[in-house]
Structures are given as structure tokens and as C-alpha cells.
Image 1 (cartoon, rainbow, N blue to C red):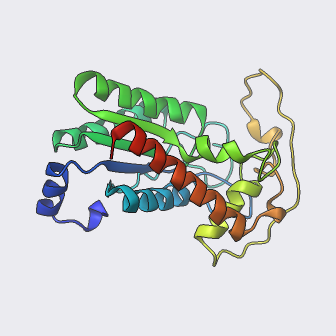
Image 2 (spheres, rainbow, N blue to C red):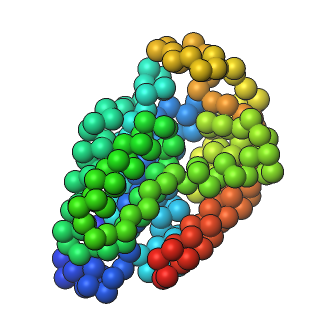
Length: 235
């Protein structure tokens, strides 16, 4: 059920029926010259829709911006501050609670550390004050389980795995896929100009990506989430 297409009475009934709410969270972030700036939004939206079909959930309108510190200087990356992200998500989650939601799932396509902490702190603030259950995770918490299995262990941002997932969702996407690039980062050092160490804005080998691989990974992610939800929420 897509919330944006529901009337107020339909939404009211969905909450009275105890349907879970899924909030996809994306980002506007550079992903090399071979993937769209909405890459981190495209993926969780698709996963949210497929999960919702299986568990009877309501899919909320997507939050399209996130905290993107490392890649903020690359063209097209538009980042929110940590405090803004936390406040925004706290108010969105609390808004659903106000209307009767008891089970809320936040799925982020962006997995940056500060971004995810902002989401979790927002959820914690709500859970602390209300009788509601909230899950917060990135679909990449699950996708990266397949590094070293379906893709190389050192695959990362906009690499084989992520490119494959986008190709599966957007088969019409036809940008040239670059070859292997595995930059080294300065371990444990906090750097300001991350682009010095990550000039091509991707890690891995996008040329090995395929829609078939992406479809397989996306299906595994959906199955993992559905199993997790059914176990924890008894849906």
C-alpha cells in the first residue's frame, strides 16, 4: 500500500488494522560517472515496495536526503547536517505514532555512519516516549553479507554489488561501466578532503555488474527482511 496514493480514510483504516509502516530513506550523493545521484534512494524504495507486498505494510513517502559527509565535495552530493537529519526523522516517526502506527521500519539506502546514527537516535527518542516498535537499518547492512561470496570482499561504494542492484531496478540505465578501482584510505585518520583518496567516487569493479546479479541480491535482501520482521513482530 502506497501512502501517497491513499485517502485519509484509507490511511486511518490501515493504522486501525495495525499495518506496519515502512519509511524509505535515501540520499542525493555522487556514485561515480556510471550511477545516478539518486542511487541510494532507488534501492530502498524498491526493497520497501517488495517487503510491503509480502507483509501488508504501508510504504510512506521517501525521505530523499541524508547525511553525506565523506562525499560532500563531489558534484551533486547534497547533505543534511546530523542534527537536521535526526530532528527530521524524529518528527516523521513521531507523526506516524500520533496517527496510530505501532510498528515502523526505517530502511535507508545510504549507509554512512553519521547518517545511520542520526536515524537510530531519532528512533530511540520516539521509542523512549511512546509504546511503539521501530526498526532502523540500511539495506546494505544485509547486502554486504554477500561480499566475499557473490562479489569480492573489497567491493564497496558504487562497485559491483551496488551497480548490479541499480541495473536490476533500472534496466534502461545504460551508462558505461568503468573497470576495477580499489583506492586505499588512511586508516584511523579523520580526513577533510576525502576526494583526494577517492577521486573516482567508487570502489570495486562495476564492469562486472549485471542485472541478473542485482536481482538475486535484491531478492535475498527482501527475503531476509521479511523473515526478520515475521520473527520479531509476529506478522
